[in-house]
Image 1 (tube, rainbow, N blue to C red):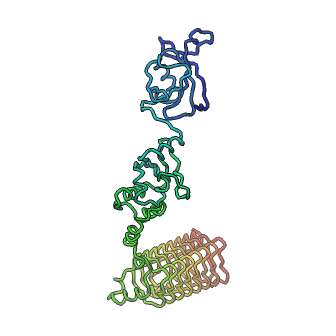
Image 2: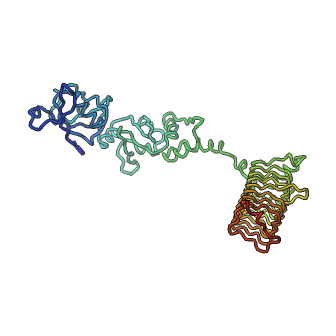
Image 3: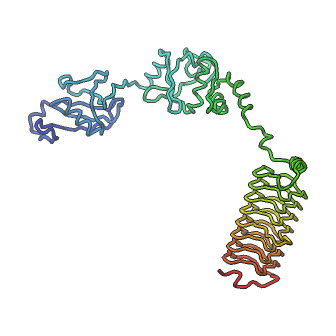
Length: 427
C-alpha cells in the first residue's frame, strides 16, 4: 500500500494524569510500544505513524489531535473493528472514523471493473445528485443513446461503445449536467412515459435529451415547447395600422392609452396623437416627423434614436424621458397659453434640437451632454442643474433662461442673440 507523507509521533501517556509526555529515549517502555500507521476512514493518503503502549482510547485520543477529528472507532483494512490493544500488531495499517462505519475502498480500476462487468445496479452522480438505476434501464429503451453506449456489456470492435465517465470516491459515475432535467429523462427510460412537474421547463429537458441522445422524447417535447412558447405576434411591435385602428375606435383621444406598449421602429409620422398616454412606451427608433404629441404623457418613455423633426410637443409631460441621440430639429414646445412642456430629468445626450422653439421649457437637471441647440429659442427656459457639457448654443436666445447650477463645461455660446448675465448662471 502506498503511504504519502507519513509522520511518526512518539506518544506515551501517564495513566494517572492522562496527559501527553515526551518519554526519554532511554526509557525501557519503548520496547513494549507498538507502531501503527493510521489513516482517516475512506482515505489512503496522509497517513500518520503512532507509537502507543496502554490502550485503544489513548490511540484514538492521539488520532483526534493529529487528524483534527473526533476519533471514536478503529478498523482493520478489511473492515474489522478493533476494541482491544491486544489485537494490534506492530506495523499494522489501521483506519480511524468519527463514528461512521468502515468505508470499503477500491481503486478506480477495480470499481470500474466491478460496476461494468458484474453489477446490474449502477449509481450516477449527475451534477452532485445521486441516481440509482439498473444497467438494463439505461440500455434497453434507447439503445443508441450515450448512456446505453457507456454501460452496455460485451465487447465491441466497431467503436460504438464509449468509455464510462470518471467515478467519485463512492464509485458513482460522474456526469456534469443538470439533475433537475435528468430526472424526468431517467423516469422515461424506466417506464416509457415523460412526466414533467409544473416547475420543469420543457426546453431544458429537451436540451438534456439532445445531449444524452434520447431521441424518443424529441417528438413529445417539441410540440410542448411550441405550445407554451410566447406567440411572436404578442411580442412584436404594433404597426401604424394598429395605432390608427385604436384611434378610430376611441371616441375621446384622452381616453386612449398606449402605456408600456411596444411601438419600436413604427412609422407614426404626421399623425394626430394629442392627449394620448404613452407612459413607459417603447418608441425606440420610431419615425415621428411632424407628429402632434401635444398634451401627451411620455413620462419615462423610450424615444432614443427616434426622428421627431418638426413634431408638435406643446404641454407634453416627458419627465425622465429617454431622447438620447434623437432628432428634434424644428420642434415646437411653446404653448401660446403659457403652459410649459416638462422635460425635467430627461436624457437628451447627443440629441439634435437645432432650430426648435423651446421657450419656457422645463429642462431642470436634464442631461444634454453633446446636444445640438443651435438657433434655438430658449427664452425663460429652466436649465437649472442641467448637464450642458459640450452643448452648442450658437445663435440661440437664452434671455432670462435659468442656468443656475448647470454644468457649462466646454459649452459653445457663439453669436448669442442676447448676452448671458451672472445671475442666470450662479446660484
